[in-house]
Length: 559
Image 1 (cartoon, helix red, strand yellow):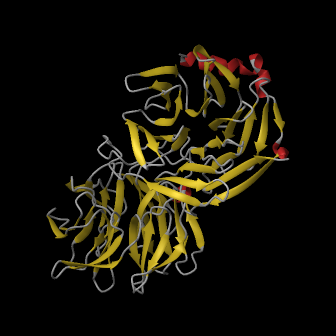
Image 2: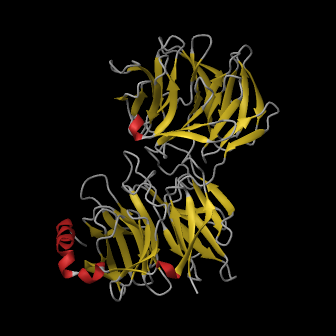
Image 3: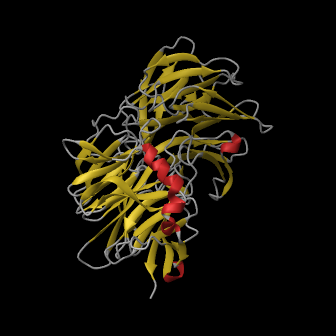
């Protein structure tokens, strides 16, 4: 076990005592680098809305941006980010003066961008999600997933929010009705409700949905609802409370919107934007796919070189063909309360951030749910899960146990744990941001993203009383892997490189540069955000995830 004072001391004297470990050479010319899989152009597609010119605005919580889209061509014409007050936007609405409002879900703020380009914000609570205006200019927001409530806001943020109702069951994508009431879907109850925003009275107008995620009125006053769980768009006839399905087979819809001609568009969790045509079929406007490729693992069948590459992709576990990059299978994550996950969703993966191989199984970690899981990809089933970690950044199998890199919630709480069914034993404490983990049969290493170093924790089967530094002056190192020659591979996200650490000489050499790694962090999330992983197949082929542009790299030694 190692204390924080020792780590700090090591960093200060590293250049003197371990200068041999920081020599940099370049052997990238010996490798070929190719992108074998491309993902979505937007990290994930959440709230959508048309402006007065029929341009489609799309929010992306994990992308930290709002994109502006031509709905006919699919061309992205603008991207609004932090400079526009956009941090982690889940929904948006335009005010009567042309101001753009968005809900920044994770940090719990509502942001406003005035027509003059002036930004302002108001803190509400984590989970601030759906947002809409009444016809007379009153502003309303609702909390989901990290909170539960409905509030009225002053559009210029000069007054404190007014709580209208709480514990609704997650009021999601809502809209103001032509009858002067607020309408919205209740995520956890499968209902659509009408709310009197002055009295707080709530009336159910439709039931029987799986997970209703969004409702919208068209220009004729007809009400439509998107069902995230069933993949259906329905029209609700409010005069007789009947519901008719008008489109189906639509996976994981987040929001719906109408343009000025009552054309219906939907956003999906994987970054896809569709138009729903009048006959119930769809037209793809923006192609989806990988939305946040993080950890990566390789498994091979008896056919040499036939790699199955598994990618932890924020909301999905994806299996890709290592030769073609084609998707073989996708496992969709559990949707639940990220503030209080208690294992009740057993049997589903939960927002995978990292993935590593353990024989025929996979080890998955998620700081979203503070959980580590063991998954059988062949049977598509959960083998085991471990709850109640404190921001687990990574997890791998080692000597029959699991090793978990844990960030912790307080300064100085970061550590690496050895975990089994009966114990969680610290291997090292006092790290800053433990990220990558790699192991052989008897050796174990961890990278520290903040300190820019890699240290060895177990050597020749023995846990080290004082971890051994093996590399310094790395630029935000994340993924670690052991190559076929026993060297360590490390993804340096700060400089966009995959580097090799020769454990015999301490020499560090570049294998690949100019990789699209190191996506900008979203406020309130761990500093590594989407983990950039590296894995090595049995033939020596290297796979690296590029989280900036949602790609998978294949790197091979040249002849």
